[in-house]
Image (cartoon, rainbow, N blue to C red):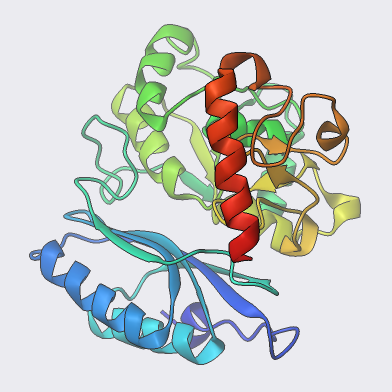
Length: 305
């Protein structure tokens, strides 16, 4: 892989900015526990924050740090055999994560059923090819993310399976796509990793024309000008920015820390919104005792800030 695929030349907008790197690669690991410990030691030394997931099938995660720290992490991963990383960068003026977590799991993205993304995967489409495919009315476009992510934004005419977890996707396919094996299926997710598995799943079930957006929504928002975009809304990200928009710039949403839903500026003006305590989506589902606890948590958080 070319050097610039691992170290894009995008400039840091200011000396204070944090480089936010989202990366993954499916690659069989003989000793994932050892890699986890090496990454934990390296990440702490470099002052990285975020989450890295190590599993027998590879590596997945998003981390933030200085340009030098991210580059050193890449050098380490390349030396460890991760020479085909799917990689995307964005920036944040503040550290978008509270700490570094390096976790050892059975899957780097949990589908819960066996698939073979290295041996059988859908057709990759770049953002321009994706736009062309979306213009075909016979294509079934599926958002493979969880429903709270879809709420923040999605592609035009995309089908929302209303997933609470990616583990729910195989059952949803069995219930809703049984009669769609002859159709073109196009799937997308935040960074592309879910679709490595979702397309492999469909191909294993006998689907033929299966496509997915390479690099996911983040690559699309980075590459496609707003006036050519088929994307509506913002993209939920799992860090302190909550959402990003075109150009992968920080979005306008904030998270309800009671239920985790992304809230638009309009929703934060709802009578049931109380920062750190409730919003219109969860107000009726928590007790007054819980709200008292949430208020105390928010008070401690603001005092720490």
